[in-house]
Length: 272
Length: 272
Image 1 (tube, rainbow over the protein chains, first blue to last red):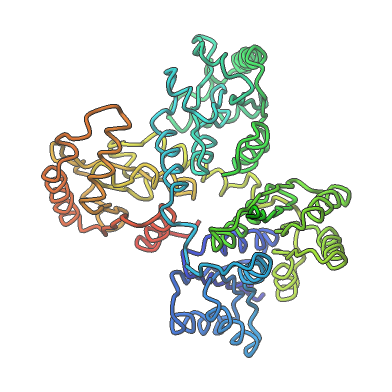
Image 2: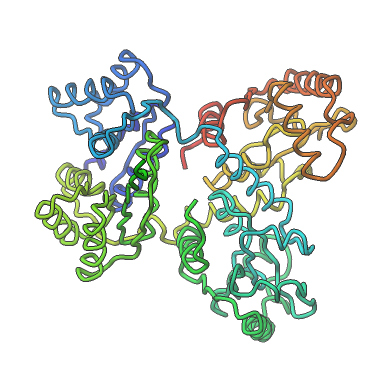
């Protein structure tokens, strides 16, 4: 039996390579049975650095995912790959050249420009700090400042979803629902304009809650994990959502990325 | 004077389109003076849905960024674009077909597969919950569990950087440094293996701290914002970093994404 060959793939970027990694991941996720090995060459800015990366890739017959803005560097890679038969698609220039053709405007040709510390960047940082500061926050002022408010009973995934939406640049607040506590009255001001009610299937909630108990070294079976309690909490949360008239999202079988994308659409938030 | 024309760009995806958005953003960031308008067509799964998106794009002469896994749909788009002269690069199939050719393995051809709820996915969720739970945590057990520990004085960007690294899947803990408090003794166990000391330039810290004071409705000038206090805190943190023998990262002029990428390299963390 021969060992399964490894597919080597090379991320070559003049910045941190996150766009190239994203494309590589999307492609390679279609081949869950192919063993892969990532090689990152980031902050590549000279022909010599690029050549070193290309030579390495050639030595492993690597698949290249490249995002370099400098057109001369991109051409250097293209020439090398044509000569050696390496596969390397330039993910940027087909589009860059087209935008230039249409608009008559030159690209600024500065690498890593999407990471520059612009106003939009600082708004994103602010959103992330907001999320951490007001996790489980309830004061009226922070409710007013939030771009969106997530409600949900325990284990409906409020925290990771809040964090992910915050890294996208939205000021998110999450408020846990428990039948024993009243919700902030100010929530009724916002309703469908910026509130999302999260829910999940009872069986999934039961499983997540048991896992949580085990993780905390507590008894797996308790009131918290009982089907009756979960049903009562779900009924309570559904009632609240009805009163608030807010959209409801069942997160069962949905990844954070999918839930976040749906929420952006549901609330018609500006794509940031 | 004629109004600046708007470049319409279309994200067409059988999932949430994040890969296509990433590529679009990288390209368009090279044209900061071009006014753009995004149009998202997500969860496209039938020829009819695709045609609707393509017709819309054609009506605005839109630039198309497409990630659909189904090869028939990709071909439908390609044929339509050749016919109409629309620009649409298929970001997936050049690579998918090449991997298939090399490995002899068929792609699973399932959309959104990178968002499936795998073990890796649940580890990421766990990392995000860990980050939120132990923000500013100090108990020895959580220090042991963390993949990495960020140290830094106030306004060195620990919180957003922690959150971002957590969404990447790393269990991050952040510990604020203040000369008046001792650091947890257990930190000396880890040193360069998983600690990063964050620092920043005094002038930048002063500006950030003043903004923070204004934001909180407090006097802009105080001990917290004084150059002397900032110098003393920086000296204290540098001393700690020296004792711990940990890598130090100056976050000034670096975006969160860049800092995160550098930290992954510095600590030689597995790329998740």
